[in-house]
Amino acid sequence: MDKELPESQMPVRPGKLLVNLTKSQLPGQEPFYKGTLPYHPTLTIDDIAKRAVENRSSYSHGTLIAGFTTMIEEIYGALEDGFNVDFGLGRTEMTVNGRFKTPYEKFDRERHAIRINLRPSPRLNQLAGWFPVEVTQFFPNAPLPNEISIRNERFEREEGREFCVIPANYTLPLFIHGQRIKVMGDDPAVGIVIRQEDSDKRYFIEPRMVFINESTRIAFMLPEALAPGKWVAEVHSQFSPNYILYKTPRVGTVSFTVRNSTLPG
Image 1: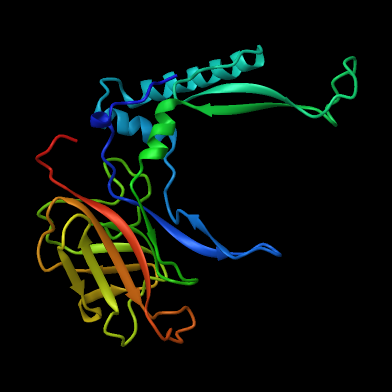
Image 2: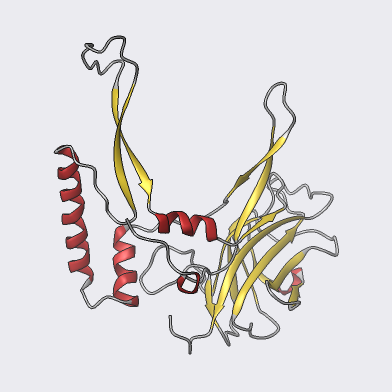
């Protein structure tokens, strides 16, 4: 399987993974909080092939798809022949589930089963252990921003577009897509905060500056272009779906990257 990478070769993420905490309690036990990752779009093999062509591969998109499809069918064939397969991201391991009463008992599919488990590679485990993470405050029905973008449309795995990445020196409207993100209320905290993760740089966008203000999409202008680096957008709002305002603002966050286009990648 793939080996771990040196820390200097680990990829740069667009920003921190934002973990929302929700309260839970089992009968007879103390309450506790569960963490969830609110929104991460899924890329298909078609998307991955496009990324490969754009980033590093001299092969065509069709060649990569055909090669991958062929390898997948061969992996299935090897599994059907009784082999375990190491495919880089991990290794398949077949196990037997169920109890046998005697050493001579036959295999009974009603009580026994063959399971194919996936054992992650060291590098995949390394990625999971390396993600920068920030725990964010969560309220039921709070704003749930999913994406910050320079485009009016939501991310739809289209070619040539990176998720939650905007270019440096960008001075046109900025869009936030999500759910329950309408900026509404008379509390002084209501508005949009744009802050840089590793500095004190911070901008506050007042509600009157939000010229598209819908429950699934908002748009606004920044006072100035953002410097390259990792940023967080916070939506502070008293909005509720029934338009009975919450007493105090609730907050939803989404991280993004401002990328210097003069740098490689």
